[in-house]
Length: 158
Image (cartoon, rainbow, N blue to C red; front, side):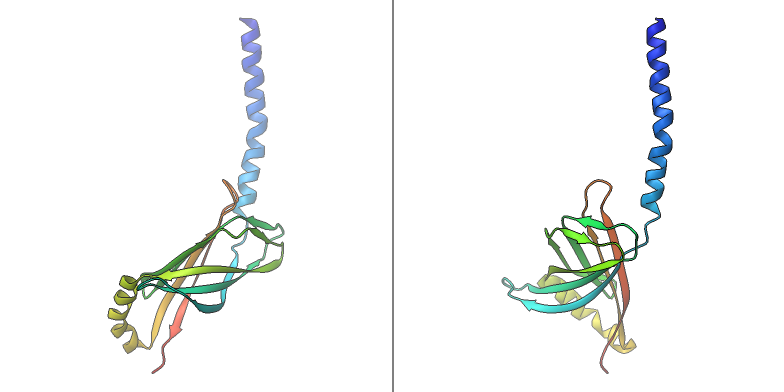
C-alpha cells in the first residue's frame, strides 16, 4: 500500500507541474490578434444548372509574431443579413508572421439564395447600401483553427 500512495503522490505532482504549462499554452493561443481578411478579387466561374459560382481571392494578413499554418479554408458570405454564398477549399499553406498570403475559394450561390436576395433588395435599394459579413476559418487541427470575420456596407448605385 505504501507504494501505491507513492505512485499516487507522483501522479499528483506531475499533474500539478503540467497544469501551469497547459494554462500558459491556452493563454498564448487566446492572446493572438485576429487575422485581417479582405476580398482581393472576384472572378466568375462555370456553374451547374441554376447555381452561380465565383472564385473569391482573399488577402489574409497576419499581425502576429507566430505564423499560422492551415490545411483548408471555409468561407460564408452574408448579404443584407441572409446567407448568400458559401465555399470550401482544401488549400494548405502558411500565413507568415507579420506577413500575408493570397487564398482562392470557390463560392456557390444557389438559385434559391439569389431569389431570396432579390426579393429583399427593395429595402436596401431605398437606403442605398447593403450590409455584408464575410466569415470563415483556416483549418489547422485541434488547436490551430483560426476563425475570421470581416464586415462592412456595400454602397449601391442610385
